[in-house]
Structures are given as structure tokens and as C-alpha cells.
Image 1: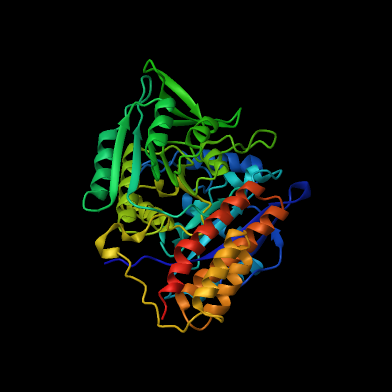
Image 2: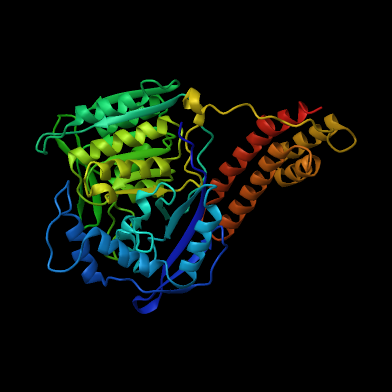
Length: 478
């Protein structure tokens, strides 16, 4: 039986400065933060275009021959040596040592597409990062997945998950597009969940955007899987999916249109098994969020899997099948994507670096692990505890309820923290986690990173957690 990897974040902030200069800083890691240091990119804008074009021709087992060394390993090495140098490299080595044998280290690349010159940073193939000292790609080791974190003004945490897990699979192969083996992908997805309880998979083919929106609103789905064709127009900076209109003809659906169609539906993972859906503009004056994946991140979708290069039908099917097999075991999205890359690699394909994982959720565990009996969490073993502070437990509980009713959540959590400290570890940790959430969102509002409405939604979630989880837990303590 596999054990789900618990990750700690190694968060790297890359920023563009004046005159084409860049800086890098570790903003969170097991080894702490680092000071800001210069980032010398291994490729100038003109060179990067050639690198991306070359890598885009690596499809299946075919590796083209170049006049210069643009192999995936060479590109990955240059990117690694540029990023993990100086203080960043030291912190990375120390962090790997600290988590060794305990869990994994999630490499989280923070990118702000609104900043000038960030187009170059965002379009480099960071998924190829190769550690020459260990002779390994970071992304082919599930202990060190690389994820992209786009800085947008949206809440980070998805709403609480309530089973059953519902997956909507959209298969699109409209007239005028190359034929795809969609049936094979459908069978792999359905097979991944056939022995799993509390999962419902629905497959639609040839749907329109309006019908997709209606289906998502009629019945909440947690995962939207699109399998079909995607394109990206470098002149406009716009990415599109190829779907169908009411007459069954080919219709280009922009990332912005898809974003609107998904608004308010509760989807927490979007899997875009289509070419070039991870691309965004390389030109500063164009909308950086006009790509399909970046538009969905801007909408606040917690996790998006998309493709930065063209991908063969075989690799796409292998990747999707392994990801859903892993998710059925209850693992996190980042671990599942890492295993999906390995599956492509084991098929002797060089396309494992084509998928890109964009994550907004602080934790890649988007779905409850009780999806399978082997991964079912056991009821928490609450230790016997003494009562809450005077004038008695019931009086204290009532006081907390009144504070919550008055939206004085911070004071309510302070009371709970005092009463639970050194008495019930599980409940105490939940309290401190909610305290940290309120502090974080307040800071984000002050910095203009999220709106007041976003803060209100976060407070509503904390309020619900106090009333429906924490207080019932307190009341059953002896």
C-alpha cells in the first residue's frame, strides 16, 4: 500500500526589476527565508524562443537533432543552475535534508504575470529542472514536484470537500480537427475509479459551452476534465479550446469564456488534456491572463493541469490514466501529477515535461482521502480533557457562540486556544490554523491582494468551522 506524501513548501519568488534584471528569493522553506539575490536567466528573450520551439518538437520517442545542445537535460541543467545558486541553493540543500525520510519538498514557483518582463519567466520550461549533482529531474521524483503559483487576488483555500467526488469528462473532436483516441482516454478514466466508492464519473461528447455551463450548474462537479484540441495565438496572446457550436461546427472557446462558464460552479480541479493550454503571452503589452490555464487561475480554480507544448495522443492518455489512478488512492494533486510524469517517462517518451501544474491551494490534497477503504481516515482519537475555563464549559461555549454571532471570530478563537492548550492537540491545532487564516486574509486585504468580499467568504468558512466542528468537539470532552 502506498503512503501519501506530506509536502513542505519550498516557495521561490522570482521578480523582474529595471533594465531586464531579475531577482530571486526563498519566501518559505523548512530552512527559512533567504535574502533577495540576483537571478541570471540562462536564456535571453530571443534565445528562449528557440529553446521553446525546439522542445516543442520533442514528441513521443522522437528527439530531433540540433546544432547546439538543446536537449531536455541540457536545458533543465541550465535552468537549475540559474535558479538554485547562492542563498537559494543553500536553502534548497538544507531543506531537502530536513524533510528527508519525513515527507516531500514541493517546489513552488511564485510568478506575477502582471509585472513587466514576467512573460519571459512564465514561459521558460521550469518543469525540466535537472539537478546535475543528483543526476535527476526534480519532476521525475514525487518527493520534489515543481508547481507554478500565479499571484492573483483570489482566496487560496478551496471550500470544504463533501463527497461524493463528481468528475465531468468533456470529449471534444469537432469537424476539421485531427482525430483523437478519446474512447481510450474515457476508458482509462472510468477504470481508475471503478473500484472506488463515493465517486461519480459523467462523460459528455461534443457539448457546447452553454450546455457545459448548464450541466455544471445543474449538478455540482469537483473536477472538469477536457480532452480535445487547444491552440495558442502568439500574436494576440490568446489561448483557445476547440469545441462545438449548436450546429455541431468547430467553435473556438477562449480562456476568458471558459472562465466565465465555470464561475460559481465549485469546480476545484480542471484538467486540460489539450495542446498549448498552459501557454501565456510572451509580449508584455498583451493580456497575461488570456491563456486558457492562466484565465482559470485568475478565476480562482484551486488547481489546473495544462499542456505547455503539443502532446501526442498516447502520452496524453497515459498521463490522464495515471493521474486519476493516483487520485483514486487519495494522494494529493501534485503527487498524482508527478506519478503521471513518471508513467509517460516509463513509456520511453520525452513528453513528461509537457504538463504544467498551476496550484492556488496551499495543500494539493483537494479531495478527502476516504475515497477508498484502504485510505479511509480513522476517527480522531481525542484525549480526555478537563473542562473549558470558568465559569464552566457550557458558559464558555455559549460565550463563544455569542462572539461568533457578533462576527468577533478572533476573540472566539482566542478563548478556544486558551481552553484547549495542552489539553486536546487536534482541536488546538485546528484553532491555531484558523487564527493563521484570519491573519493572512487581513494582511492580503491591506496589501490589495484580495477583495473585501473574498475576506468575507474566508470569515464565513471559519465561522462555520467554529460552530460545526470546534464547538461540538469541545462539548464531547469530559
